[in-house]
Image (cartoon, rainbow, N blue to C red):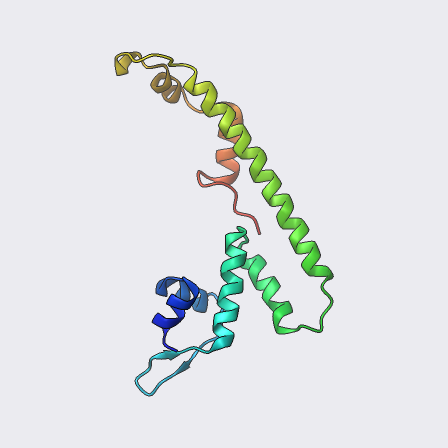
Length: 150
């Protein structure tokens, strides 16, 4: 099957498939004489596994580690358990950070309870004053888009 069919069967954009190939998450496909990529069922299965891992917010490095076990199915799965435990820890940390963010946003929202001129808006004044220390520390540690683990 060509890349468009792989895209349709897996619900994965073509550019994402190419990206996963460049990142080594998908094995290189065979090529036709006209240099079109040709994929098989193993590509479908592997791409679905990668997509499921991404849906669980796993990093590409975590996925690479899991794929090593797919490629060596006789290996012991203890490292898979450890990887998942580690990822659960990352998720718990992110949840705590999001709860802190929610608290900060609610405190900011409470600074303006009625409509008034924008120059008198407590929310805008609070934003202009800068983030609270806990939020500033989180932004410094993880960047504005949240943590990037592994």
